[in-house]
Length: 577
Ligand code: BGC
Ligand code: MG
Image (cartoon, rainbow, N blue to C red; front, top):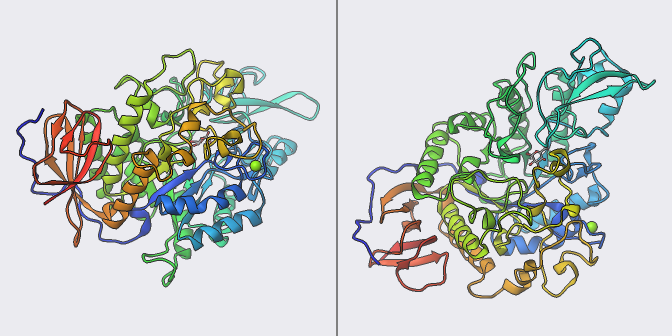
């Protein structure tokens, strides 16, 4: 049913064309979760040689870079986000020379490599933490972490009331060599992830050195874990609310606590930026734009003006736009979210960095089928209501097409190009996310989005590795969604992603200006324009079926029709004849 509309665009753009050509302003970056991408040695866990072997897949997909979640030495209490040695690869994933090979091969294929840096905490098996335990209260070794005496007559109560993100107390009491209880240490996450003391000069120096270590090995940048938590409020005041972080727990978006977004974090990142800038080549011929090294903040910070402080010109290059990820699937909310993101980041000259899925949230092919406007769950269990897979995929494709038409950078999460749903029926016994145990089985946790990739329907573990027992079980539906079932198949989600990424690159959409369009009711519609390129129109329909203007020439659409109709939950890119 068509409606009368004007399809007029506003006179002034809501976001201007990007004048600078730095790659990170407009790139699409693919997140590899190394445990779950390709297992080359059949031990059931993905590894670095596995990643290297599939880099051509990423080149052919059409992304510009990959971000690899942590691969460092680790006891794996939080799947590698508990680092025991920041300068070595865990044997489970390979060796430093495997990392060198990966970086070299990626560069040959014109793919940049971003590694994950975890500065808020180390593993409790890090040499520094072991030394801190051994050296005892008052020692310089203890000063590198957050040790405090307990409250109460005998120090038997924790120093304050903070709770850990994964559940339970944020403080754990240690015992001395004779087994007597003594001080407590802070861990915002698992007890095996003690928080560093970022007021300590040795900690600051150490991380500058770690940055250099990886920059010297040729990495193109860093994704920085919980970038908003390094500095805690002076005196560590009580915080009556639960110390939850929006991204990792239920939707208590309580990021105003004394552990989040303290003003003191910014000077840390200014020092890091100086290090990165000192590596930025002036005449690197490998790339057609500056070969800058870049860093991206994982900071669950609201409102957007607070987040924009992380991407001021002398701090981070990018910060994930999690507000967009969390915006309800409604035209008005999305328009508002997109507009406020541009307004805040444009004010500091930073790009906006779109993201819909990662290893911490329910995959968007499943999430978007959940009741609209309700808090996002931390995992879904078999006993929970099961979301409608077809609806989820339909909306996910529309959401990604909207995302990739927007100026700015974008991160894709491994497997979303196959339309992978969350594993929502995983047996509880298989769960590995510490959240499951620490929350006393009240939150399923993040395993459902971390399931190994299906590459081939009829191979063991769907081609993930030669072993038949991957570290997390794969749901049966992953077989039909495997790469070999979609490769070259018209109408498949994989070919849809390839097509979008090709068009996005050829048309330089990441660098465009955005002007809102008055489309039919219940749509998000805009024009993306770049000098020297045709205007690209994008419409996402949240209401009843509508139609494109008569002169529309379709470039991309998230469904398979071939007329000018735009059904509900569909995005279309088009030009005007
Ligand atoms: C990472 C999580 C991790 C946490 C603690 C995050 O935000 O993305 O996967 O559990 O930091 O390091
Ligand atoms: Mg392996």
